[in-house]
Structure formats: C-alpha cells, structure tokens
Image (cartoon, rainbow, N blue to C red; front, side):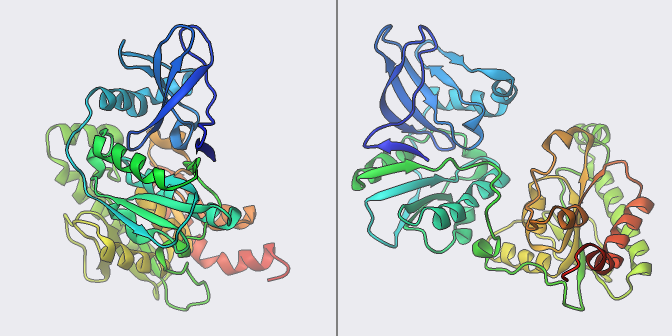
Length: 401
C-alpha cells in the first residue's frame, strides 16, 4: 500500500537534475493514479505514475508543459505505446464531460485503502478487483473502498466499506475525466488516512466464489460439460490469415472454419466421452452449431448473462479456448482448462488463467497450454486423456486421497 494522506509516501527524483521531488497533489486520471510534484532546485513540475497495477514496473514521469516523457528500463519502453502514450495524451486533452458516479457507503470509516479497478481492458479490471480479498483478509483494520467500472459492480465481494461505481465504457477508460478527479479528491476529504492499493496485475490470493457467488467445479458430480469459449475478434486461425481476412472484411470465412474445427473436435471427443454434454459459450453468435452442441453464446455481456455463463463454466469439467481475457472466468470456475496459444502470445503465458489449485502437480495436470498449430487430432487426445485419466492421476499422485 502507498500512503497518500496525510502524507504522500512516494519518493522520486527530478528527471532533469536528480533532486528529490516534492509531492504537491494527487491526480486521479482514471486508470492511472498520479502524483504532481515540483523540483525545489530547477522548479520543474512533473506528473508521475504511482507504482501500482501495470505501472509497478513501468512508471512514467511527464513534464506536461514541455511535452517530455521520462521512463527507465526496457519494460517501460515496451509498454509505452499502450500505457504511457495514452496517459500523456489524456493529460494533454482532459475531458470536461460529466460522468455518472454512484457511491455506496456500508460503514463509516477514517482509515481507508483505495482499490482502483478502472482499466480499458476487461481482464485488467477483473484482475485488479481480485486484490480485494487480500485486503479484506490480511488488513482487517483498514477499510476498503473499491472504485469499479459499472460492468464489474456485480462482482465486488462483501465486506468492503464503500463502492464507487464509475460509468465509463472500456473504450473510453484511457481518457482523463476531470469530473472523476474532482469526485475522488472531494470524497477523500472525509477520511483521516488514505492508502492506495498496489492493485497487483496478477494477484494469487483469491477465491473466485467470493466474487461471483458461483461455486467451482465439483468433480464428484456425474454429469459434466465440455465447453469451448467462442470469440470473434481472435479466431482459431493463424495470425497472418486473421490479419489478411480482417483487412478485406471477410472474417466470416474464418468464423466458419473455427466453427468446423470446434465441431470436429467435439465429435471426436464424443466417441470417447459419450455421456458428456458439449457446449459453446462466449461473445458473438455468428455461424450455427448442431443441436447436440448447446449454444450459450451472447451478443453482449451483462450481469445476468455473466452469472449464467459462470454457472456453465462451473458445470464444465473442461473448458477450451483461445488465449485471452475470455479465459479468466472459465478457468476460475471449471475443473480443467486448455489454453490454445497463438504464436504472438507466448510472452503473455498464464496471464489469462485464474489458478485455483495450490499443489503444483495438480495444477500442471489441470491447466494445459498448447501451441496454436496443435492438430485437432492431438488436441482431442490430450483433452480426452485429461478427462479419462483424472481419477487415476489423483490416486497415483496423492496417497491421502
């Protein structure tokens, strides 16, 4: 945690003369929580990221007047296009539009921790929210205030002191809304002590049931599903083909191919697992599936559809899908997961999977990462083996089960 009231505990040096910066005020940009500081030697004014979330390893210093950005390390350089550049642009172009913010207060408090879950990517927002459980369990004397985008309000766990729900769509979450900054600054006047959560981008201490209210898969149940997670913006197709077909706006051809691959995979698995239910879920409803594949896809997610999807994941002994944030909730609820990795995504290995197994042997069995070019025949063999050999694996590897 980082204290921001009554003192701002953030030490940094002037990027021009290396003199210690003197903190002046906080700027609540939205995704970013920034400190505005002044150099007492050269009098430069610098806006700097607090080291939270993805800025933990890629914080930026900005001289807004000169239009200069400073950062250290290869990681900050790598992230500049999708993290630093939008931050600079937003600070240069503040939005005066009023945004809707609702405040829910569950208890009176004086010492609070602010967990900011605003982001422009769904998966990032969800992962930040999962930090809430760590605060509630490890810091019971600190009251937790959650800043949450509207689409994730339903997942805020019980026990928080306050919830501030911000109605900003994902695609506009990189903007700097002055009304949001003013709202937060005004609300913080009510508290004696304020800290900011580190909002780790990939927290490990959480139980997804505390957030969704949906239990994880029960391996004792006789009936189970095998579920493929459908998406239409990252297809089960080679990256160069996707780029080519998208350029000429003929992605429907690749969607038909994806549909065929899923049907072929399921048909082969059906011979090995005749009692299983086969399911398709996800975002987008283009192309049709035969009746023996239950189709739960939607055109748009909301609270009700997400809850229903989590129930489907919970009933799934195995979920399969293309790497991405679409795999977070499925992997958190399902019994086992196969993550199909495009060639350009190996650098993001495991970032889309919510592990709920602590034993490394069991985790290695339940979560598999397969190259994109894995054949359907090989994928079927691996998937069927996971389902058919699970009980045998447990009896061989765990003497007390």
